[in-house]
Every structure is written in structure tokens, then in C-alpha cells.
Length: 570
Image (cartoon, rainbow, N blue to C red):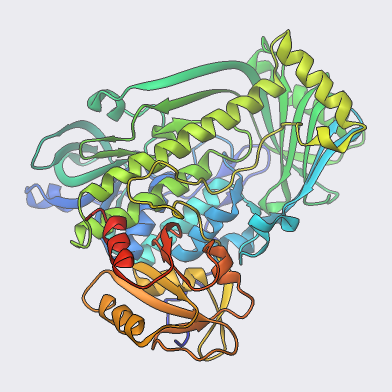
């Protein structure tokens, strides 16, 4: 199997916007184009309508475009990011970066952002915990780094560019959904625009418009929510003197009244510094230029030389819907759940939500899979949402403990961590986001539900390939990887499976063994097999979102049944 020819994702990493020092970020504006429904007077029906062009909705649109599925993306604004607001999310995980690589925007992100893997945590002046994610096996083998820091609006801008390159998706700016209803035939949406209102129909609606979405009320969505009293102040700052690209956190910062502080480097040499404030702090006061400058001098010295890019105060809350699908409507990103901003579990989980649903919608639209496959989105991503809410709430309680047991535990942990290595793992300033596993999925069997890292292998011509290349080659089909030697009967079965079915089969052999299958790759170091969590003679079914659906040994009826199961057919 030679290296396949794929579309190029090379593009200048210079979108037409930047920030203006001291006044926030200057964002691009996209023109309103009169939609065909207003010109022709007819109501059109689309396979998918996406509401909300934030990072989640744009990832969804880009993934559908990559799979060749026609869709409409509606957004009430005319820009990426939020006008007058901060850079919002900044820290993107390896799994998100692997998704962006598959979509063709990773190179742009890597060229603009800042890679990091080292984190250090301090209590007072003492370093009580540190890590290097490159040394951890669950991060070290991927083609993508553990994390890249970059302002969220840059990624959103890259996604807009990529959607334009791919086609298939009509992005409509300044288009607000003002009414909605659904029935057994379709969903009906009323869209408000500067040129008037119009109706649009959809087989499926994806709501990624944010936590204040009207779709919650329209669908009768129930949720569990919790509001914290913790107050924080963001300061996006550029320093004249460069500093190490490491994540530094303080549980008890002596320069911030012994409250917590976060410090991250982003693109454009801008640092994101989060200062924990008193629970009764006045948001307007803590975000004033005088207060921010005083905190910066306390942290970096009276002679600190810097410029303030943006400042803002916030409080956090946690919220999770009881289910993520209501008829034809799928909730994702911040419409599905809100998490405390610890461990980069907000925007990254929205990206994963989109990647999970996009291939399933594409398979159903193409007639490759049963409608039952769509229900697995709720099963898998609701489990992920609930887990992320739980993890971030625990961090919130560590950083702002209640008096009594919580306070005693935190004080004891910090004290012990100063002296004993075992206690350092208990220091909780944010458990960094990883790819969630799916343990309650109806379409994942034993051995399934785990993410497959973007590891390297060798094509049959000796060139280097990665898992993402195989997934792109499969073009939305299931990828069956068979490791080791094949009998003549097994080889014939694989060839039959690849004909007329939404499956691509590839044999993976070591550096010296002879391959029996026409489509084969070499896995000389065993990284591909290890990424699939199998050993010896085995097979693994990898879904288009880079997750395992099942693993097994013999190429027999079990493999066929597992393929049908993965598509919701059996």
C-alpha cells in the first residue's frame, strides 16, 4: 500500500486579523450574503443545519465538508471569537490537534501557536508538583504534541478558511434562528437576517450556539447545573522579556493574597494570566487597569515592562444536559455542558463532540449506517460530558475549598507535597484533558471505546505514514486493521469485505514479513498495533473519529458482526 494522494492542507498561517494592544483583539468580519431561500421564495431542505459558528460548530461544519456532506451553518454574528471579549479558550489537547490534522488545519495551528508539555505548580515559593507530558506513554507517540496554546479565534478563523476550501457547507453570517419546530418528517427553522426572514428545513439540526441557546426551551431539555462563587480576572499581557513556554500555576500565590494564579504563553508572545479573586470582589474593579497593573507589579516586580492586550473578569458554573439528543436536534459544545475552566476541558470537548457526530451523520446520510448509530452520540458524549464536569468540579473545590474537611484536606496535601513525592499527585490545579473513553456505548464492543493515537508506520513503498492518513484514505468508512500473517481464506474474506461495503481493510506486518493482502502497511516498531491496544495476531476496527469500535483475533463471522454492530445495523 503506497502513500495515498491527499488534498494539501498547506496554507499561510496569517489570517487577516490580529490584536490591538490595550483595546482587545481586532477580529475579521465576514459579509452577509443573501441566501437562495430569500431570492427564490422556496423552502429548501438540507441533510444537516448547524447553528453556531464557534469552535464546535465550525469543527462540525469542517468535518462534514471533508466528508462531502451538504450542510448549512448559521451564525448570528459576522466574525469569529467574540467582539470585545478575550481570546477565550487557549489550550488545545493532543486529541483535538489530531482531529485538526485530519481536517487539514493543524499545520496552520502549529505554525501560529506555542507547543508545551511541561507544567509546574507552586504553593507559595515552593514547587510542589511538576510534569512533562512528553514522558507519558499516552502522549509520547503521536505525531501531534501534548498541547498547543493558541487564541481560540485563530483556530476558528483557520476553520472558516478550510470550509471555504472544501466546499459543501454554506456558511451564513448574520443569521439568527428565531423559531423552531420538528416533527416526524423534518425540522423547520425560521431564520432572521438583515434582508428579511426565511424558512429552512433539515433532516438533522446541530446546536452549537452556546449555553444561552433557545433550543433548550424549544426542545424541553432538562439539565443539572451548579454556580460557583469563585471570581477570576483574566489578563492577556505581552512582556518585553521572553519567558519559558511552560504552564505555571500557583495554589497559594504570595503576590495574589495567597489565592490561585495561572500563567500560559499563547501566540503572538501574549501571556494569559488568570488571577483568583475574593468571592465578594467587584468584577468591574478587579478588571480595572489600575488593579491589573498592581497585580502584575506584585508578581513580576515594580519595573515590569509589558503591555496589556485584554482584561476581563469572570465567574464559572457547571452545567450538563440530561441527554444530548432530542429528536432531530443534537446538542454539543457549550450547549451540551459547561465546565469550570480547569484542565482545558471546555473547547476541546466541543471539538470531540463534533468529531464524534460528524462521521455518524455522514454514514447515515450516505446510507451506510442505521439511524440507530446516531443514538450512540448521546451515549458516548454524554458520558464524556458528565466525566468532565465531575473532574473540573473536583478541581474547583480544591482551589476554593469549603471550611472543614475540604480545607483540611487541601492544607494537608500542600504540606505533604512539599516533602513527599506520593502527595504531589494529589495536588489538583486541573487534571489536563485527555481523550475520553466510551464505556456505555451501544456500538462499541469489548476492546472498543478507546482513542487511537496518531502514531507512525511505513507505507509499502517505505515512506512514513500516520493513522490520520489511513483515516483520510478511508473517507468516512470503517478501517479494519489486521495484524500479522493471513491465511488464504482470511485474505479472501478481507477482499470481499472491502467490496461494496463502507469498510477499508489493511494488513499491518512487521519489517520483514511477507504481506498477503494487496492493501498493507508495515509496523516495524509495533506502534500501530500498540495504539490499537491489541497484541499478536489480531484485528481492530477503527472508526473515522479515531476510536476503536471492536477488536478480535480470527478473521471470521465475529469480524463481520462487529462491523455491523459498529454501524448500528446489528
